[in-house]
Length: 59
Image 1 (spheres, helix red, strand yellow):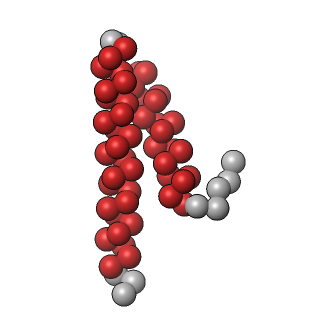
Image 2: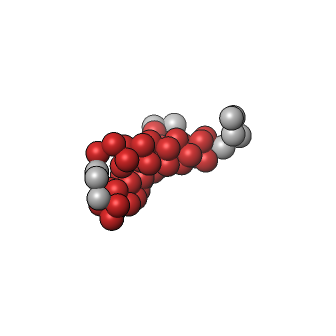
């Protein structure tokens, strides 16, 4: 599965990782959902922030 957008590929990867880690690390359903969503948002936000910082070095 190859996407043309690196951002979309990263979002799909972050979603898969967040789901797997939430299933492995939390036992309660509500805690799994919250942990998975938090992890997903941190991964996507961090990747966007890091990409923006790398863009500054190309100017």
